Length: 98
Figure 1 (cartoon, rainbow, N blue to C red):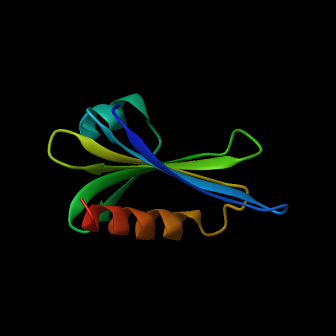
Figure 2 (cartoon, rainbow, N blue to C red; figure 1 turned 90 degrees about the horizontal axis):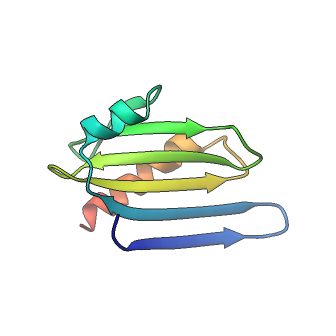
């Protein structure tokens, strides 16, 4: 991956961040390497989402097809209740600005 963008929200009660980057892999390569995800559509683009709950801070990974490469988003939060909705909304914002 090349450069990336990073946003952080932190307080005594939560630790939330979003990291974005362009991944040189296609969605098909990512799905093959990262099973057990969910297909999604983001502003007309094929996408894929995987949730990692194996640590104290849960992480949602989202990849969106950009035609041979993928927009990658890593959404880390200590409160997983709205992560699916947040992942969809944040991915749509990002795609709208590429």
